[in-house]
Length: 353
Image 1 (cartoon, rainbow, N blue to C red):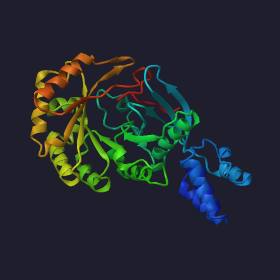
Image 2 (image 1 turned 180 degrees about the vertical axis):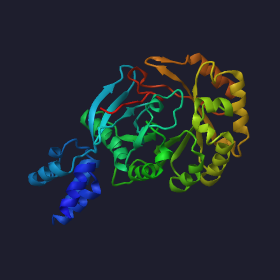
Image 3 (image 1 turned 45 degrees about the vertical axis):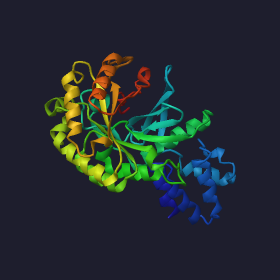
Image 4 (image 1 turned 120 degrees about the vertical axis):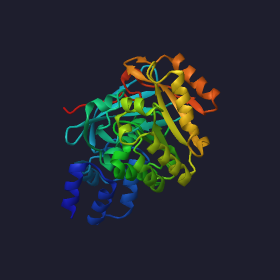
């Protein structure tokens, strides 16, 4: 049994449950489990050598058979303009993903990826240009947060990680089971203890998964990438609209809101002369008003990132926001962060070695 656990760990990386089983099967006292737990999830150790409460021999065994992360950290790049860092991670099979640490306000947040690449091919998203490679495992998702927790502790940045957003590479609701498991793990008090209301799931509009999401993660935040309220134009920007159009999305959101009573965020990347004109404001407002309990819908605008250092003019975004406010729609302009290191919305991309 111990050999099987060791083999599992070598393939998939450190799994806390497998470490617990290893300690139990080895006949070690149960308090060793609590010491491991504290070292990983409280102290944020980056190496088993730092777990000094454990005997040296046990540290050596754990170092050999239970790597702390299920991937290698290949590179970390920090923005010169914002409190943003981006990590390039190499998975066990050689595929690579990116994940982001950012501090938009007073605390650290992690933007996690849920897939290698993405099958949805939104026209403005770099990840979509990679195509879809595979889903990430539950552990590969949660380890992104653990890795950044280690980084924050190691660099003495002071604050804990207080929120997680599933807005990185991939469509979270197309890797549904692993995303839900990861979100639940992250919120466990004996793990990283990130409250469910501080976890946000973003979707491009996989309408038939929203009912299940309302059941499985009713306290998590939901963000829907909308970007256009005209079916034909949205289908050009986001081919997923051909499968789940605005009518499908409307019905799914009405049900989701009725089930959870939670506010839903509509993400809208403003692209000048593409989805920024007065008729786009009007159509967006009309679509929102057509939804039951629409007072629970809030629009988040962001200047679309067009490349390194380039994005839609802020004036265009402000004009769009003013138009929505004039029609009684709740709206916030989100600050785009990490553009200089290609860590902003829609910029994450990586390839296999």
